[in-house]
Amino acid sequence: MRIKLVKLAHARSGDKGDTANVGLIALREELFPLLAREVTAERVKEHFKGICHGEVERFELPNLGALNFLLHESLGGGGTLSLMTDAQGKTFSTALLRMEIEIPDEEAGSLRLSDGPN
Amino acid sequence: MKEKIRIAAGQGFWGDLPDAPVRQVEGGPIDYLMLDYLAEVTMSIMQKQKARDPNAGYARDFVPLMKQILPACVERNIKVIANAGGVNVEGCAAAVRQVASELNLGGKIKIGIVTGDNILDRIDDLLARGIELRNMDTDERLITVRDRIQSANAYLGAAPIVEALDRGAHVVITGRATDTGLTLGPMIHEFGWGNEDWDKLAAGTIAGHIIECGAQCSGGNCQFDWQNIPDLANVGFPIAEASADGTFVITKHDGTGGCVNVPSIKEQLVYEMGDPHEYITPDCVADFTSIQLADAGKDRVRVFGVKGRPATDSLKVSVSYSAGYKAVGTLVYAWPDAYDKARAADRILRARLEKLGLRFEQLLTEFVGVSSTHGLLAGEPSPEISEVQLRVGVRDNDRKSIERFTKEIAPLILTGPPGVTGFAGGRPKVEEIVAYWPALIPKSEITAKVDVIKV
Image (spheres, rainbow over the protein chains, first blue to last red):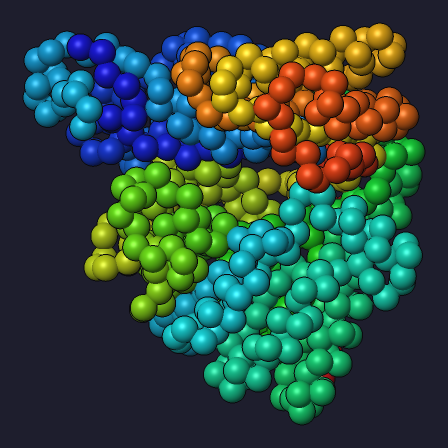
């Protein structure tokens, strides 16, 4: 089934110059391996097409059940140079949570996931 | 030696809740209050203030705050660490000393003054000697913006703060210093950690990273179960309860709102993070992938297992420089066809700017209420959407072009699509852009200076 990351993780984003960083944190520890497998840098770059104009780097923090993504050239120059409403990239966190991944139904079942509203 | 010390964060950024530091002092037992007054380009503002008035150039808000809390701090031996000194640390200290003596605290406190961060007067000398101060993001050489530089400061670490505390300071005022150093300094002072105790230094650094944004680790801006976070109106700012062995607990005062739990701490840990293996500070390199978290009761999270590595040979430098002008104009369009009207207004505006022969380095249109935060990911709005804000921004080095742009917004009210409002702010303001230039400088080039004065 297809499932949005918002059902699997919470996130926080910030900025470093023209780069937005998005930390993606598994809602439950047992969801981390799924995130680590499916939320690749390539897929995140594709998801942010038109927003992220540079490379996407990915780092893993298994101790926190988290992934950290750096989205280069995403903030219109960043800081005071940017004209964007979200020049600090603070809403990139929830933008990432819109992303969908595909998981086999048995795995979804064993992780107690459903694609319903809650 | 104390077994545990409680370091309270009083401010997450310059412009945070004014009462937060007072509530930290009054809300329960703390040993240290740390305050961050410097955003990235704050120094340029302070440099301008000092150019107009040699007695200015520091965070003015710090002085009335001291007037409010200094008596309680002296009575309960709470020490204050703040980077409020800006580009005039001595001036800030003098103002605090004045306040202290007016409060009859003469003979009772010492003020630590940490300087050596300001390298504005040394730029030409540094460049001449081949220290290029290249931009860490773009690799450009600083000389390309030489005539536009407004401030230049190295980030000092914990060491000078430790020295000030070792020499008896009750209030330590710095210029540019790392936020993490403001928290780590007290730990090194109290626990006698060596400057090569990498794991402990990393632990203190991480405690600093967690509390440096104030309530952003204690329920503020927290996505996890946000609807059930209690009483954010009275959110408690965080307190790091640090132990000599390098472990610590993040908590907040009893009776305050917000929450401190593993999810809220995790969100702050990933905030503004680059490579988690290598969180570089003047004092050490901390490995965020070593951090272990555990629930330790209501609104208490224990942090342990932290590993660190030796510090690098460089310090980060923040240079601020003039980078042109910008302006942003907004108008709100109401149902029906709010989005269509907003887009039509944008087309009309752009056609007029084109006809005027105006060119901008950047011209950005956003539709707030539709796609200004998530862009293409937002999809099409509902046709019944009640209102849409048209937001157009321009940036260029030519001030006149920006000024001319600002005169084209209000006319759209009488010369553009209907159902428009939200112009009460008047003509948009032209803003001078001060941009941030991060660079590295060898540590050997910077010598921190610590003075301790008696009130």
